Length: 94
Image (cartoon, rainbow, N blue to C red; front, side, top):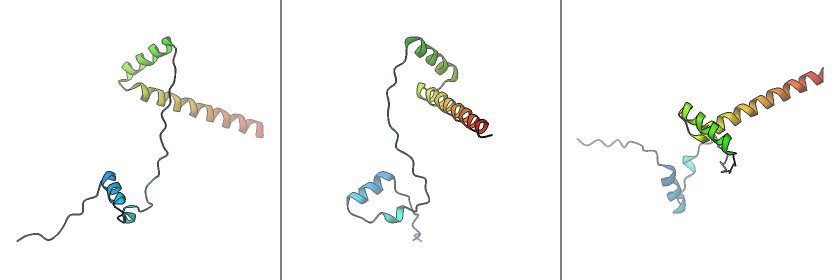
């Protein structure tokens, strides 16, 4: 006996885009429960040769990409900056 139960497959983003291009209603794919991610922008950064050697040394040591090291260190720098700024504000408020 054949099963009449159809398994629901979730279409890929590409398939949903193709349906939209055909004018199909795709609104049911969007539940407003997800998180909208901000756009990612590419930037170029120039490094002095000695700094690039240091960066590449960390890349080898950590076994990750240059981009990963740069992002991690930049995030750490931002976090330290905001903590110091918050502490300065707290001290001047009293």
